[in-house]
Structures are given as C-alpha cells and as structure tokens.
Length: 99
Image: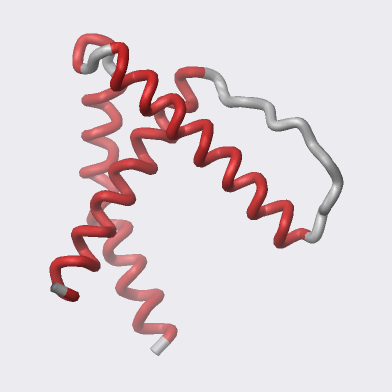
C-alpha cells in the first residue's frame, strides 16, 4: 500500500506543479493583489516557515532555544502562496472522493 501511496502522491505533485507556478506568478505581481492580500500571504509564509523549523528541530531532537528569523518579504510571499494553494488543492483532491 505504501508504494501505491507514494506513486499517487508523486503523480499529484507532478500534475499540480504547473498550477502552483501559475498562481505564484499571478499573485507575485504587485498589481494583481491588494495590500491586505499581500500581507496575508507574507504572514502565512512566515508562519509556515516557523512551523517547519519547529518540526524539523523536533525530529532532529534539538531542544535548544532558538530565535526565529523571519523570511524576507518576497520569499515569505512565495512560500505563503505556495502553501495556500497546495493546501487548497490537496483538500479538494482528498475531499471530493471522500464526500
């Protein structure tokens, strides 16, 4: 079952890559979004980065205190857009057959 899961996951990731790159390009332009939307994606990108760092440190069993360094606005915007649309896409892909 695990090889089947890995194969389906790989196929979904490959097929969804053009969609994610298109939405990233669409939202990365300043004219395409409002200031509020841009700030939302920057905050989401930094939150995702912080969560990812915490999970990685937990897996490595590194329990020392560390100061979270936020990403630059452009990189946080890109990560936030990518995370948002990945979450939306995978919820749709999983939710429609379950429904």
